[in-house]
Image (cartoon, rainbow, N blue to C red; front, side):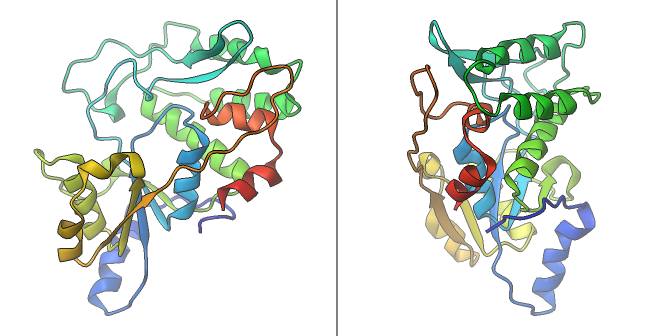
Length: 258
């Protein structure tokens, strides 16, 4: 399990898995591959922590009004509300890694203002607000850069040490016409993974026998319902990681990762 100080792979370290395979060194490597979502929910981090290696799939086609640009937090009047960041108009062929933020809007201030809903009740508001403020102070040109920085922030907070690399920076030579299950298989083979793990909601996209033919075990991460106290708010499951961090201390969150 990837818990401890965080680690970020460079290209040479990622392709080293192939070298180990050719030299006969036997290693069990669980791989996870996911798009760079905007402040995703806790299960995303449970899966990440359970993997030995993680690839951010930033070469997929960008889709507006998706979990790439928005997520949900608590709202006193409506139950939940969206937090989001604006992206410039993009063509249909734009990759997530190339989708540019709309820097003409003061989205940083708007995002932090939205989170003030937690200030009076959430015990860890000050700490989380400081983490977000420091992370958002960086200069981001694309939605992928922003989401990866926020992913790193949360991983460091949760002490997840799973090495993370970015698909766009790896010499993977992905086929252009593959479906999601085949992309994951190609990446798994290229990086020398012995097991590929995916959220259970995507089972229908994968052919277990196809993975088995290449000596790769296909497993699925099961969602584990967790509830926690949310002060005077009504609890809502599966909100952004921000909500989890606002209400729960680090030790509790780390215990839930296991």
